[in-house]
Image 1: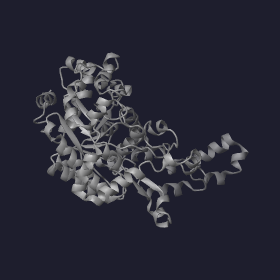
Image 2: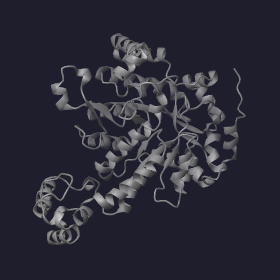
Image 3: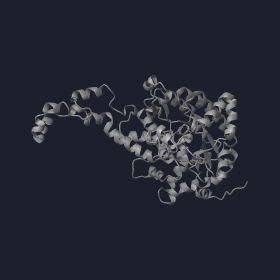
Image 4: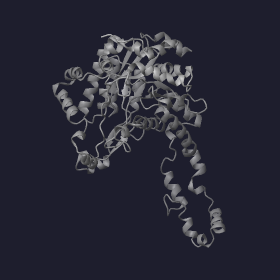
Length: 489
């Protein structure tokens, strides 16, 4: 079948003096072929369990419920029609050779290609099935895309329920399969231990979101260390549909808006406040699909909180015993009149609303038994140090139709960040694969960013991300020379 190579995106690419690297495309794994890999690696019983769960439980029975039952049981609206209905694009997303052949039509020189099947199962609570699926997806993707390695790098699926399983799969994917990109879930949904011990029905246990880097029941430092050893950046691809505030029974849109950003925000905060960035200063992280608008807000908020809630400002400005008791009494008497004077002793023992009825000494002492500096693990001595931790270690996947990408290039602010062009081809967001780069270039055409900003967006930033630990990441690819020159520049 013939198709046109004369696309809007190829025309944009022809005008550029630099390559375009897609930081986050997707392919749609053909399930019957995947099942062959799963049977081979894990056995027929695991494959049968996958089929059973995929056909019976993926939508949690939503379609079989009446509207009244949905409101009563509150299942979240399942993702519907999440793949393109453009026939050529659907086939492209499912066939590695066709995807490779159409890259020029997309205006893309090199593509980092992520799983779709793995997105749904990377957090599967069934450990045996979760790990088997990851292993089969990784073997399948490595083998099927190996002939196209000079233009496509598939990402490995790395489940994160424990550091041990994450280390095992990442090591296998990099050292045995030769994959150069890993994709993690940036959180694990876990049962709250106290509620799990008391619950009669395991399905009704209260859960919490473990963002891996802060207050986790597991120490993930050995995994971050292994990533450095394997020379792979950590790219995270997780959402938060079903979290509080994204639990609509009927509206996919209600649940979908902002859900990648919310999960990434929690992960980024955990990495900073948990001290991971401080302990692993060479390790870069990418948060995919959520855009960069949330990150511009977050870095600003983190700095604002550091200026008020780190140790020294807390001691200087909000420690209860800093209050001058005699001055307070004088002010109460002079300005409050008899109503205050008559209640003086009670007032002096109840100077806070949170909590009332504790003295200044009691409120101070109880906090000194705890860590009062929320930024202690980050080990930053200034707002600029905190900003650098955020801006130098984090990258943000931005889709072509997201105008807030321009915020990251605004030189008037203090949040110049590293957005990376993420096509998201293969998913419903993209109705025509040949128009993605052209749509991203509208940021330049509309005067929102400069041509140099666009170069960073579609080329330099993603090159920096993946060569930070592995200078040879692009060796043997069509962009090898251009990347070397760009990083030297």
